[in-house]
Length: 237
Image (cartoon, rainbow, N blue to C red; front, top):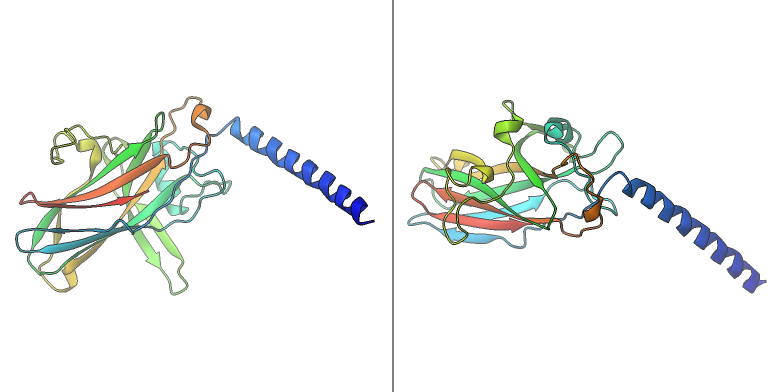
């Protein structure tokens, strides 16, 4: 009897796996899937002439399924932010990261923020700054894109225009700019700043199934540069 039960279970297993494989194949005919994760274990501390900064990046959203992210069009960013990176079918379409920067001095500094992306071949990545709207005691959070969100001016690709051995700059690296001239310091309360960035895989409007199943489709680096030219960076993926 045990052998007979084992045979029944085996048949059921293969039928189940066959159905799952078929479902994946059907979904894969429409979408490309990717993996994404994040960590703050790559925190790097940088020094300026008089001020020490600490910088860390942590992934806020946790929407990955077994297949990773589904590419989306850039104009969908506001809806994606407000739905915590899930589309109307519950599929993951983006990730939101928290950027913490802390100074050990109340000295006023002005920062330019950059996002640079390393992408797997054939993967197009996009990002924009988002804002935390609310967070309750139970940990429920709500985000939105900035009030002046515009696809043409508020979406970056993270692709550098300057040489890799040069510092990032506003002119050559406009596609990497997250923001400019953000103040930190001036008081104890202003020594710590929190920013949020949303990253997604750009839908090109063409068949992207050739990169389906790519793991770690992108890694990124957050870089802050002071008006004096000092910089600090931390990585995320």
